[in-house]
Length: 78
Length: 493
Image 1 (cartoon, rainbow over the protein chains, first blue to last red):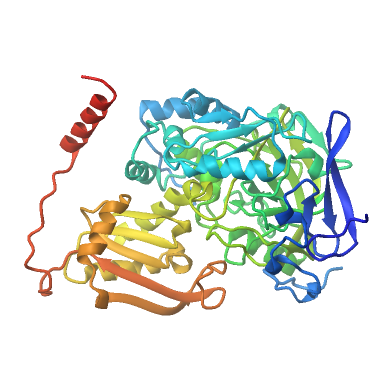
Image 2 (cartoon, rainbow over the protein chains, first blue to last red):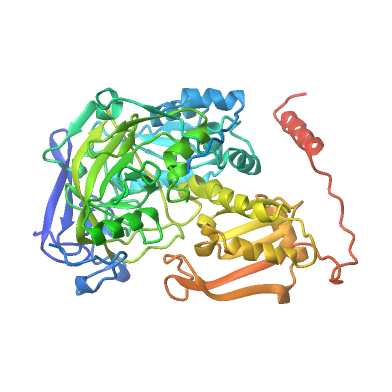
């Protein structure tokens, strides 16, 4: 099954690291390129299952460009 | 500007200062006093580190530091939490018994406060333990650090207790304007991270300056530090005052500094230093993060940094913090250093101020004990407190008690509230500045302040003039009797 982001449900996710135990992969860390969520696939469901995560914490359909800036950029990035 | 003011310390405090030069030294010292434990079992990063950190922090008096060295999937990696998580640990750092009352710790911090004559030793970079290992290619923070999620709904894995050093982008040679602060850091890609600051903080000022003038902003993220460093990095000192100088004076012993590749000064004995550079005008999605008011901050766009190199000691310790709904290590780490400057600033104008307890959620609630010079005087003191640098943003609920009420003893404070407060004599000041992450704000950054005057009534106020207060026995004689009873309880004679 293809891994999707538990927060925004984007398929655009990248593996960052794999934890090893006795030569076997124990868990993987993933990062979402769209909403920047990071998670480990061994975490409890409350953090990594979109069906269990609280609704307020989900970002499916949220316009990333409209998020508030804490320190507004001085100019457009080059 | 640095002063010539120095601190005189007790023999015990000098011994601790001479002994403790790094996080490792402090963990050993705590262990000798039963204040540091190594978790014996294999654990998963989540939720185990979170849960054990909370359990350690629940004992505010003598909860231990905890080292994890059996983290599944991170063989050989180590995490330390709750190093500043109890007043017992802070007391040991100050060279005092671990059962020292909080009020005495407060006055010891006050005694050491305001001394910033730098006590610094320079160490050549090639001789600094932090440079035992250097990674400048194929950097992967997820591999180098045993990262984990602090609270279940955080947006990612946070480095929550690092001390970040940065030079003023326009005056990179000015030592005093070099800033050391604790900012929340969310690891993003293998070699990128966000760092959250606000324009009011020194780091926020430097970010704005760098982007406005197109100048580079280079930072060194120090992880696992001398225990005095996070206490002072989290304390608002003046923009041109050095946190290194304050931290060294607080300990009364030199801090060993070396120079990072990017030119910033770093602690030579720190466990790990991540060097990074602000990616001008680039932002990344950051948060939520379970913050000190006990609620999650929102998801926002935050400045992005790229890692240029990582230096670390052999077998480094990733020191991190549990932060969230209080009480947490965050409260113990910064509470006394939040209270001290408010006290010092009030005391200048109002010598009647006896003590300030702003331990709660970075001072969202503060208790000031003060001797009324005349009727209503305590209210004037409260107004002055709201005008102190920290009070301007943070002091939301202020309780004023008499000078003979210990603000660190909440039973005494409740006595004052129960018997001194008149419900029609509280003050609400609407639409004041407020910390943006305070969930009780009307809108983020703006809300109401509350002043409760629970001091005694005096002429010309006739209310409550009739009761004659009981003169409760207190002082050294009672303290000695309590000690005697304590010994009798333990089976002594």
